[in-house]
Length: 283
Ligand SMILES: C[C@H](O)[C@H](O)C1=Nc2c(nc(N)[nH]c2=O)NC1
Ligand SMILES: [Fe+3]
Image (cartoon, rainbow, N blue to C red; front, top):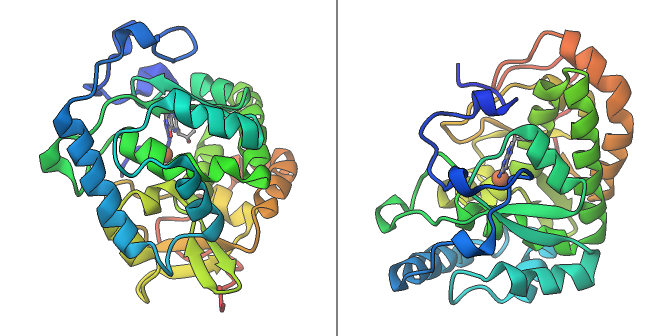
């Protein structure tokens, strides 16, 4: 059973790519140590963006697509300071370079100060379809566009604060599940139809096609259900949760303190399993 969520550095998977030796106490990388971009890096980036752009119409959430367009990042690996200038003006967020996956405490600490950590390295050309760890394509294209949307921006900061508290109370496993289903693999019901806003979906061609296909189950978002739902990290998701607006995520954070305790004690629901009162999303 793949491990759920990352608790402390100790459980950071071995052999992670990325320059952890030069990482600062808050998990970020100083500009001076950042490897320059090669022509092949920019070519890999352009190929990945162009491939996703072809399947975004009718699948990607409108606020996310507007954010992507505002970031003007189709032609080359983006410079974080350029994107940060746009984000600061929109929602006060900014981007910081990091070596890769960070221990939860550092990760939550950055989110709580409206700084989103973006992995510096980019996958190799022969890894276009799948990589295990997040690279700059997943972190930037997947997570950054929606940081221009005020409700979502407010929610992710609140999630950071909640994460710092939850760590003290040993409630990280259910909170990692919330991040997985509602930040990485979230769907939203828009007037024009069902759309994806999750970073793990929109940065993967396979998952984008699968999430909006007839195959997976889709349930109405329910915080208590999500906090009990375990997941596989090495395959497309069998079940997704659907929100109706980004304000629902911020409201759920408000509910979390009382639900986290119950979730820690409750039996986890296996990936793709049945919940006690699942409400299928009927569109
Ligand atoms: C918090 C979340 O559940 C998950 O464990 C983590 N995600 C990330 C992380 N670190 C980075 N850089 N990016 C993530 O998405 N550390 C922990
Ligand atoms: Fe991610």
